[in-house]
Length: 448
Image 1 (cartoon, helix red, strand yellow):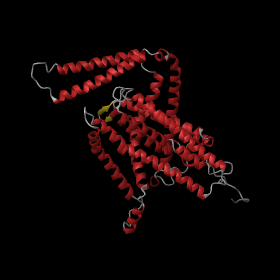
Image 2 (image 1 turned 135 degrees about the vertical axis):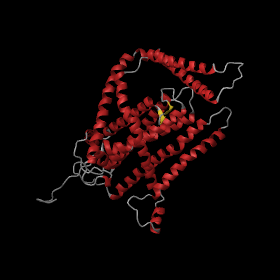
Image 3 (image 1 turned 60 degrees about the vertical axis):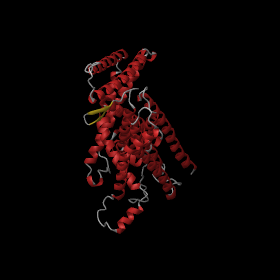
Image 4 (image 1 turned 180 degrees about the horizontal axis):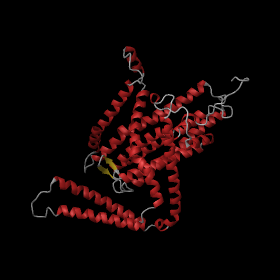
């Protein structure tokens, strides 16, 4: 019993350490990409907490797998002595509560805190009280809260495979389920579905762009400074061209369109000036002069990134083919894989490492951070868009607070989609069973 408690405490202790590391990573990520001259404390706090909570949620399921694996003795395939029905039920209830809290926090940030901080910054004006900014932000955030309520009500009343007997007994069962577990699961499913679309749009190109970026190396600082200065000169020329239409003394009023253009160009000029100062500082730094020392490590990381990308694509492709060729149940069961026909490399690797916790945890954390970095690279390259409209740019030390919050929303949803991909496509057997093994014990000749 003492050994089991040590295993459980060690698993949750490892999760706590990983959560603290991910929180520090979220702080550094936010400071790295936020605009140094236009930082909104509320937006930065929301960004840090949202990223840390979502990354920790994805990193939770290896702990769940380890706890399930400790129930059975790998040598015999039988339950351990301490693994009574009551002990297993208590363990399951603790893990279930942690999952509900984690996904509830993710949903609250997606539907409330991120929209609130976004509109709070949008309403910024000189000498405007905080109370009015909050009231305006709450007014616009109400739409997202309304969408969340509609999803919760839909999840509460949606009962799969129960399309008949909609009588008072059915309504009584629905009202008895007001604990919200089914509704929260439905909201989480919607977030995962949207996250899968973001993975396709941003993580998929990022998986190829990130290795190319590492292998190709960074653009030289001198060239980067020249490019930024050229953009700055073009920006000022456009501003001068607009202002020349309205010479002093002409009496001609500037149009709303040109006024908005001047405002956008002025904001872009400030960002470019900030980027130019940072690029000049990097160009003159001692780290840039020692870049030739770091370059071999970038090449090694690039090769590792190519290898990991190929492994991820291979594992997802093999699992997808297995799901489509599954003959037991197929589409009615959601393409659940009962018996794989082709070897999945990452799944086999996780199964081999699962008895040596936390080695499998470290590998899973590396994959999570790699997918997060690939999605970030996709957002940097493509930009934050709505259809063909480029809304914000995601740049180092030059991302506006609105762009930072919008990028955080995309990253959170992509991590929600990653939860499903990791458990159902990348390593399905590891996610279901961990290191559990069932041994057939022969009690007599020809019988079990």
